[in-house]
Amino acid sequence: IIELTKWFDNIFENGWQPEQKALTLGIQPIRNIKSVNEQIEQPEVNGAKVIRLGMQMPQETVVLILRQKQINETEIEVNLRLYPSADAMYLPDDVKLEVLDETGNLIPTLEAQARADNWLQLKFTGELKDKFSVKVSLGESSIMEHFLL
Image (cartoon, rainbow, N blue to C red; front, top):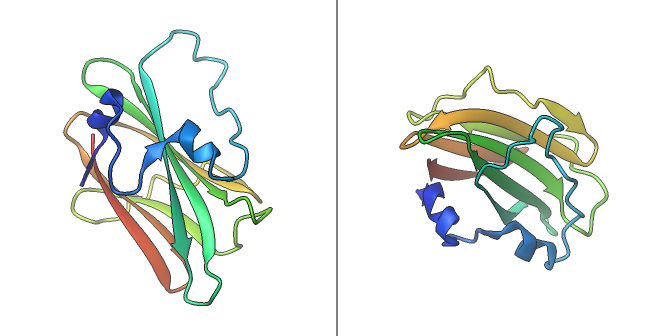
Protein backbone atom coordinates (compact mmCIF):
# COMPACT_ATOMS: atom_id res chain seq x y z
CA ILE A 1 0.00 0.00 0.00
CA ILE A 2 1.37 3.38 -1.00
CA GLU A 3 0.86 5.98 1.72
CA LEU A 4 0.12 9.20 -0.14
CA THR A 5 0.65 11.41 2.93
CA LYS A 6 4.37 10.52 2.73
CA TRP A 7 4.54 12.30 -0.63
CA PHE A 8 4.06 15.61 1.22
CA ASP A 9 7.41 14.79 2.91
CA ASN A 10 8.96 13.95 -0.49
CA ILE A 11 9.02 10.20 0.28
CA PHE A 12 8.14 8.18 -2.84
CA GLU A 13 8.21 4.36 -2.96
CA ASN A 14 7.42 1.35 -5.19
CA GLY A 15 8.50 2.93 -8.47
CA TRP A 16 6.70 6.23 -7.88
CA GLN A 17 8.67 9.43 -8.18
CA PRO A 18 7.98 13.17 -8.18
CA GLU A 19 6.20 14.23 -11.37
CA GLN A 20 8.96 16.66 -12.36
CA LYS A 21 11.56 13.90 -12.10
CA ALA A 22 9.41 11.68 -14.32
CA LEU A 23 9.50 14.37 -16.99
CA THR A 24 13.22 13.72 -17.35
CA LEU A 25 12.47 10.09 -18.28
CA GLY A 26 11.19 11.20 -21.65
CA ILE A 27 7.46 10.85 -21.10
CA GLN A 28 4.97 12.93 -23.06
CA PRO A 29 4.87 16.55 -21.93
CA ILE A 30 2.42 16.92 -19.07
CA ARG A 31 -0.37 19.35 -19.71
CA ASN A 32 -1.34 21.70 -16.91
CA ILE A 33 -4.49 20.31 -15.29
CA LYS A 34 -5.15 23.11 -12.85
CA SER A 35 -8.57 24.67 -13.26
CA VAL A 36 -9.32 28.35 -13.31
CA ASN A 37 -11.15 27.97 -9.97
CA GLU A 38 -7.98 27.03 -8.14
CA GLN A 39 -7.07 30.53 -7.05
CA ILE A 40 -6.41 29.62 -3.40
CA GLU A 41 -3.09 27.89 -2.95
CA GLN A 42 -3.46 24.55 -1.17
CA PRO A 43 -0.72 22.01 -0.48
CA GLU A 44 -0.34 19.81 -3.56
CA VAL A 45 2.05 16.99 -4.37
CA ASN A 46 2.30 14.98 -7.57
CA GLY A 47 3.81 11.61 -8.40
CA ALA A 48 4.31 9.60 -11.57
CA LYS A 49 4.96 5.98 -12.41
CA VAL A 50 5.86 4.29 -15.69
CA ILE A 51 3.67 1.21 -16.28
CA ARG A 52 4.29 -1.55 -18.82
CA LEU A 53 1.18 -3.32 -20.11
CA GLY A 54 0.42 -6.07 -22.57
CA MET A 55 1.50 -9.60 -23.28
CA GLN A 56 3.16 -8.96 -26.62
CA MET A 57 6.64 -7.59 -27.08
CA PRO A 58 7.29 -4.75 -27.06
CA GLN A 59 4.92 -3.98 -24.24
CA GLU A 60 2.81 -0.83 -24.24
CA THR A 61 4.22 1.76 -21.87
CA VAL A 62 2.01 4.36 -20.22
CA VAL A 63 2.61 6.90 -17.49
CA LEU A 64 0.23 7.22 -14.56
CA ILE A 65 0.27 10.59 -12.82
CA LEU A 66 -1.39 11.04 -9.45
CA ARG A 67 -1.90 14.56 -8.22
CA GLN A 68 -3.21 15.09 -4.71
CA LYS A 69 -4.24 18.35 -3.15
CA GLN A 70 -5.23 18.90 0.45
CA ILE A 71 -8.61 20.64 0.51
CA ASN A 72 -8.84 20.91 4.30
CA GLU A 73 -7.54 19.01 7.34
CA THR A 74 -9.37 15.79 6.42
CA GLU A 75 -10.18 15.95 2.69
CA ILE A 76 -7.84 15.23 -0.21
CA GLU A 77 -8.63 15.76 -3.89
CA VAL A 78 -7.08 13.10 -6.11
CA ASN A 79 -6.59 13.61 -9.84
CA LEU A 80 -5.36 10.63 -11.89
CA ARG A 81 -4.13 11.02 -15.44
CA LEU A 82 -2.87 8.35 -17.79
CA TYR A 83 -0.58 9.39 -20.65
CA PRO A 84 1.29 7.53 -23.39
CA SER A 85 5.04 7.28 -22.99
CA ALA A 86 7.33 9.39 -25.14
CA ASP A 87 7.62 6.72 -27.83
CA ALA A 88 3.85 6.84 -28.54
CA MET A 89 1.64 9.68 -29.68
CA TYR A 90 -1.59 8.16 -28.35
CA LEU A 91 -2.86 5.82 -25.68
CA PRO A 92 -3.82 2.34 -26.92
CA ASP A 93 -7.51 2.28 -27.92
CA ASP A 94 -8.63 -0.25 -25.31
CA VAL A 95 -6.62 0.98 -22.32
CA LYS A 96 -8.72 1.49 -19.17
CA LEU A 97 -8.20 3.51 -15.99
CA GLU A 98 -10.41 2.49 -13.05
CA VAL A 99 -10.65 3.26 -9.33
CA LEU A 100 -11.75 0.61 -6.83
CA ASP A 101 -12.84 1.02 -3.22
CA GLU A 102 -11.03 -0.62 -0.30
CA THR A 103 -12.99 -3.87 -0.77
CA GLY A 104 -11.91 -4.11 -4.42
CA ASN A 105 -15.24 -3.08 -5.94
CA LEU A 106 -15.23 -0.79 -8.95
CA ILE A 107 -16.55 2.67 -8.14
CA PRO A 108 -19.08 2.98 -10.98
CA THR A 109 -19.69 6.70 -10.53
CA LEU A 110 -16.04 7.32 -11.39
CA GLU A 111 -15.73 7.13 -15.13
CA ALA A 112 -13.18 8.92 -17.21
CA GLN A 113 -14.27 12.56 -16.99
CA ALA A 114 -12.18 13.43 -19.97
CA ARG A 115 -10.96 11.25 -22.75
CA ALA A 116 -8.71 12.33 -25.52
CA ASP A 117 -6.50 10.28 -27.80
CA ASN A 118 -3.50 10.95 -25.63
CA TRP A 119 -4.79 10.95 -22.03
CA LEU A 120 -7.46 9.69 -19.60
CA GLN A 121 -8.46 11.39 -16.37
CA LEU A 122 -10.31 10.44 -13.17
CA LYS A 123 -10.88 12.84 -10.32
CA PHE A 124 -12.38 12.30 -6.86
CA THR A 125 -12.25 13.48 -3.26
CA GLY A 126 -11.45 11.24 -0.29
CA GLU A 127 -10.76 11.56 3.39
CA LEU A 128 -7.55 10.85 5.28
CA LYS A 129 -7.12 7.12 5.99
CA ASP A 130 -9.38 6.17 3.02
CA LYS A 131 -8.01 3.27 0.98
CA PHE A 132 -8.47 2.89 -2.76
CA SER A 133 -6.90 1.08 -5.68
CA VAL A 134 -6.14 2.17 -9.23
CA LYS A 135 -6.32 -0.37 -12.03
CA VAL A 136 -4.74 0.23 -15.41
CA SER A 137 -5.60 -2.43 -17.95
CA LEU A 138 -5.03 -3.26 -21.60
CA GLY A 139 -6.74 -6.39 -22.90
CA GLU A 140 -5.94 -9.28 -20.54
CA SER A 141 -3.04 -7.43 -18.91
CA SER A 142 -3.58 -5.19 -15.89
CA ILE A 143 -1.63 -3.50 -13.11
CA MET A 144 -3.14 -2.61 -9.75
CA GLU A 145 -1.77 0.00 -7.34
CA HIS A 146 -3.11 0.29 -3.78
CA PHE A 147 -3.19 3.61 -1.92
CA LEU A 148 -3.89 5.04 1.53
CA LEU A 149 -4.82 8.71 1.75
